[in-house]
Image 1 (tube, protein in one colour):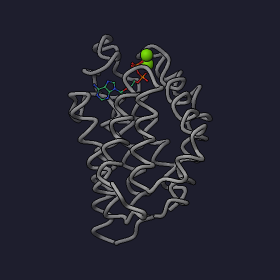
Image 2: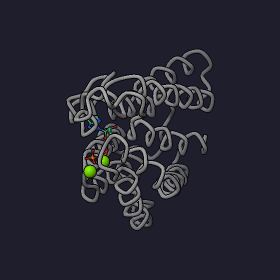
Image 3: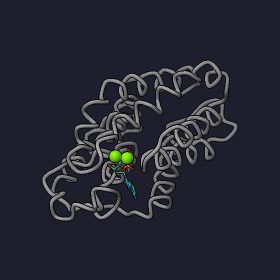
Length: 206
Ligand code: ADP
Ligand code: MG
Ligand code: MG
């Protein structure tokens, strides 16, 4: 994966966050404060504004800077969390002009660790992690089995979507949705949903 490819993925992410703005906001309306779509769309539109300068950076810096833009421009929990995810991935990829699929998997692991540390959250708390962690496991498993990056990301995407469905069945214990307690059951987590859209953007360019 070279920098041209990464820019194409970023373009897809920008488009997805714009297209899913209302949907994600509706999800957050039910169990949060109704701004997740707005937050994500704002962050990615700022990224889009800096597209030309990002496009001149190496892969590591590009991804790290993307995270810094999210931290700086997105209010709410998701800005610092997704921001940290991209920053940690970018720091792991420091200096790289091209990213192998092994690099991608390790950078994704760093991203997840960043979210867990920053959010003090684990799997099963009805957050974005409930899509991220199954996606990571499925991608690693498929990669070991086939060595095929495309089918690995597709397997990750399927697992992330299952993770979103799983968030409907559990009580939120982190973030705003935790204020609802048991009433959060039956509703999916907006952050888990937004993660599947970001992973879809990656899958579309494999
Ligand atoms: P806010 O809740 O501040 O309005 P958003 O609505 O943009 O922020 O984002 C909410 C999403 O952030 C949730 O759906 C959840 O996936 C994620 N989230 C919230 N708190 C945490 C946490 N402590 N750890 C991991 N993810 C979290
Ligand atoms: Mg919100
Ligand atoms: Mg908010």
